[in-house]
Image (cartoon, rainbow, N blue to C red; front, side):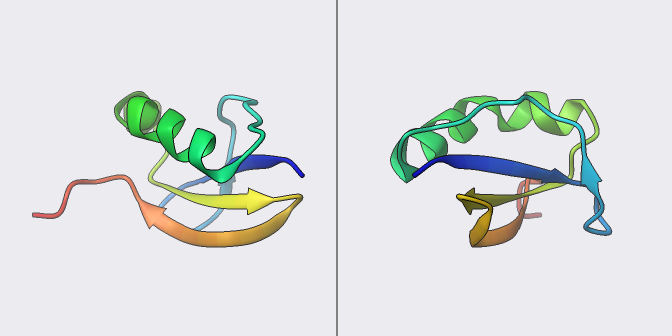
Length: 66
């Protein structure tokens, strides 16, 4: 099994982002916790976690709640 993040704009259209893959969900989530600001700065608005191309959860916005 392989996990990866799908990067999206605010309308849900897929965007280019780091081509990172992870062995488990926890590793993917830890990476996102360290990388979300950089992703947001690059124009990515939301992410969806995929396991072998099947959605696990998301889309999840990267902006802090107001």
